[in-house]
Image (cartoon, rainbow, N blue to C red; front, side, top):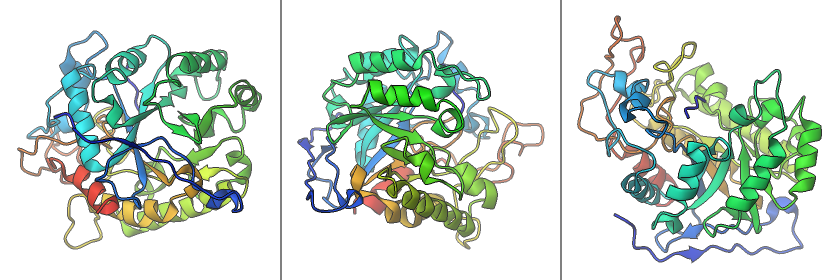
Length: 390
């Protein structure tokens, strides 16, 4: 994951899910303080999306932050519905909340790079204080790569201080996501920083902040182990692409592989009392930002119609919904709401341009690799709503 540093008039309810103490841990319904409106049926999952508040706020012209976005390399280019935006704009936040509610999202996992960084300032001052903030819930996505250093030489000296800061500035906010009255923090790439290393530091963190509901970005591949899951209250997977479409392209085989990985991970996690949160993504292409990865079409290449969004529909129906876990409130994650650098976003585009496989590279297809890219408007918001709420 690359890192660079209207309003809905809906009555809001606090969803409380009661459970019996007589059933096993994995049969319990967690209590989650999700903002729910009466348009959300009771059977709907609670859906979060990774959210990035880093655009146009690092002292450079806003256009600079969008230059290495795949959709800006297309011919013709495709832009967000609200244009190339700054993340601290109240109008942008209002529109993103509106889109999120339309899609049935319940919360954002907001990228957080440390105290007093632009992401911290925008999260605290622009998002949580926005007049529409109470329409959603919010959780910190702790960006380990920015706080803990290199994979092979990590340093953990900031970890406890960071969580003390989060406790002081975030956890008591009424819009902060809580499970069983415990504030949730999601640690990015826990499978790198807290598996074969960092275990003593993780244990100290759990002892110092026992009230935190800690979610590890821990699941990747077919051989997940219970011993890894026991370090967390819940485990999930940020990287959907790397364990599915990177291997099998946008195909039914990729869907089956991802579903099998999640079935195993959920079973192993539940065996040690840890919850499981399935994650899905609409596609992936980071070739405008870095070299080395093959992009993923956003349509099933082994289906004759090849409809835009068919990959996302299949992931929801065949991967996420069958693996919802009551013990964490039937949560699921979407990678992502607006990670445009990796083209995993479901945020609405302007919807004005025709489909294209042409890009601005000398070969005209270096970035697209011949896949068609649709100026999809609100398609992914509608798909998420249709497959989970209707």
